Image (cartoon, rainbow, N blue to C red):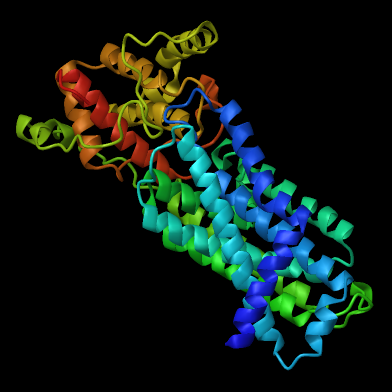
Amino acid sequence: MNSFAAHFAISWRLHLRNRMALAYGYIFPLMFLGVFWVLYRHEAPPLFRHLGELLTVTILGGACFGLPTTLVSEREQGVWRRYRLTPVPLGRLLASTVAARFGIIVSAGLLQLAAAFAVGMPLPAHPVALAVAFAVAALAFIGLGLLMAMLADTVSAVQALGQCVFLPMLVIGGVAVPVASLPHWAQRLANVFPGRYAVESMQSATTGTDLSALPWQLAMLALTGLAAALAAMRLFRWDLGQRFAALPGKAWLGFILAAWLAAGSLADWRDRAAAPVTVAPAVVAAGARAPWKNITAKDIDALNFQGPSDDGVVAPFAPEDDIPDDSDQVQLQELRAALPRWEPGARGDDLQRVRNLLCVAAVADITQQPTERYIPGVVLAQLRTVFPQDQLIQMLTWIALHPDEGTVLQNVSELGVDGVAGGPQMVRERSHYYALKCIARLIGGQP
């Protein structure tokens, strides 16, 4: 245990002397926070919807750039060759290295949170869940960083390899571009990247939504991180003279690749199992009364309207006196003109038509459209035009009480709402919230 503590302290000191590692660990994430602040400064509250992405960038900077840069630099300087002469086992040396790096990443994450709070971001909805998700994601990416250190012969090779990991994770892996905004093929490919699970787990803990998926996301992170760490141990190099090209055991790289592909396949299977084949609308026999018509005033009074606020990041709903700017007005006017002719909202079972129209607002929210807060008002206006108010309240109440019934739409791009929702369950959740908010407006109450 004394050797563990001694090497832990040495690792901290060496890190603080490595300027490049400090830049990757602290300055690089803060630069991203500044960029996100500029891009999303009009959102209220600021940065709340993007904290998962920012913390994932912080972890990537410390684990996939800072850690391998430090390890390869120490190997080049002969530090690890000297460690080899000590009676300390390799496992203990690596454990203390991981512990030191974990502490460094935690300190960088706290710095990122402090900066976000300073610009007005509120406290996360579930701080404990966020801490657990951050810890699991950090350990998973530390495993990947160890593997990168074993693959790279020089510090410059680390930087090149880091970009090969970081850029795809940024664009396709859900770190900088929301997965829901990607085309369908890219969403399926994103299942292979652990960055997606890091972002989703930390973001769900921040906003307090979809926590049911947290164990799955953490399991995917643990799987990829453990596989990478095991492969790194099998490919470990003590000396600069041990070049990667001459190392035996490269088949272990197939192990990490198989783990990543297995995680992606499991996630893809899970998405397919949960999606579009959902419960079909109930078939009402000729002359039979539609179930939603049995909704009474007592059912409506019993609804729980405690949900996301209208000006929050989940299910926003602009008040009537909030006037959009000119560019948004154009898109909203096109939506108003298209909705009456939109097939899913114009024909078929009345209850399903209402559900389809709610999906328009839900998909706009999930894919973070610039006009997301105004679209629910346009949808409600269309619903009031098509259905008598008493029947509309009954149908909305039925949908709010039975969110898992019927089918939902994840793509409404024909209405000018770009992007595809990340899963049917998210659409059902947002449709439930918007059903409640529409009911509150129709009965004259406060959302």
